[in-house]
Length: 410
Image (tube, rainbow, N blue to C red):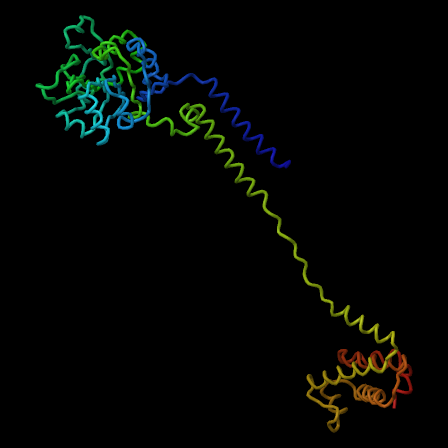
């Protein structure tokens, strides 16, 4: 755990520095066209949301449901749609036309419209990038209302970049121009449909905070003035989608400082986990090697025989092992003629050593009991047989052969 503190301290330091920089940084406005009624950025619709109740005193309802989902509750209502692109599906388009024909008043402001809607109403739109961005001497442009009751000598100016879309084609026998720019581009059309009417506008940026907080509120009030003073339903689904299905982290992810703090936290946790996985691994269990108990077993058996004083039985097993060794290593059997001489030659042991060993073996076979001294002498001669060549002579010279028991020397 002590090793973990340096990583925790390092990550905490990074997080603290980041928060300090973000809290002391100058506020940066986002210039993305969000059209969200909760957005206070320049191109949000927060100001419009608070301005609309003064135009529609019976109430403004904001919903994220579609036209098709609300078709039974929208009859004879004022419908308002603000979006970058309005491209209704087949069901939504049919519902929209049915509501308009049934007496509803619809106002739609979008930079682009879906092909199904344009073909149904026989409209075409165009994008005037070069005329506004490249060849216009001023970065601002004026708009005017063609309706006599709304006409005013006061010009309303907007940035040219926000007025780049227009209706390039429309049926003049069934549609009329409601708003045009100073370059004679059609920005808003009025289209009567049955008992109701539809207004289509190509400048949704004109309804955002950057203009609604200024004197250009006049444009909003005049644009919506033909709608009856009833209840207004703002269909927000076509811009921001269904808020009810939004992630619980929406508030964090839609605020840039909080979003970066969230991502940094996840990244720090990931790095911490990687370091932990590298530093702390499951210990490898120590498997003890199997012990060789052969020696302990032999000692136990030897002690058992010794305690019973069965010396003859012990030495007979030793003799049996010796004869088996001779058969497997020198290919000799004790009953063969000249066994002693042949064993001496093949093993390289002195003839005297082999004779004494064989005499001791024969003695054991002839007696019924064996003393400890006799057991010790014969065991020693057996051990000397397994020693390397020359060890027996050195030992005999040093100690002499008189230590051997008379009963084993025949």
